[in-house]
Length: 185
Image (cartoon, rainbow, N blue to C red):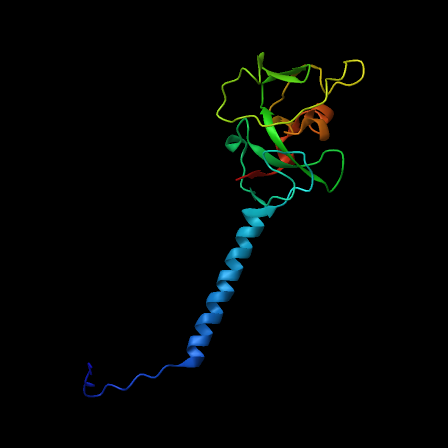
C-alpha cells in the first residue's frame, strides 16, 4: 500500500534478534530484582495457620503484611503480625486494642479502655470476634477478668479476635513496638 523511498545514504534497518534478546533479559532481571526487594523490605504474603483472628482473617486466607511500620502509623483496631514473646521463632496475628497511656481492664470478658467498654466505643473499626465460652472466675484465670493496667510508652495491648483459642496480651501483657513485624494491608 504505502511505500517509503529510502533517502540517499540511509541503510535498510534489520531486526536484530541478539539485541532484542539482551533487552528482554535485562528487563526481566531488573524486574525480578525489584520484585524481590519489595518482597524482602516492604510487603510480604502471610497465610494464618490458626483460627486466632477468625472470622476477620480466617485460617488459610492469604493476606499481605507491610513491613514499613512506624509507631505513629499504628492505630487502634489495626491487625499486626508480632513475634511471639514466649515461643521463639513463632509469630501471631493480633489486633491493637490499647496504646501508650491507655488504662486497660477486662470484666467478664468485656474490654474496657480508659473506662469505656468496647461495646460502647464508637471506633472507626468494627470488632469481629467470637467468644462462645462463659467467663472464667478471677480465682482461676486473669484472662477474662483483668484488673487495671496502664500501657507504657511505645507498648501495645493486643487481643486476638478469636479470644477463646489464642494467646495474647491477657497472657503476656502489653508488647513493645520492637516486637511488631508488620501491619496487615
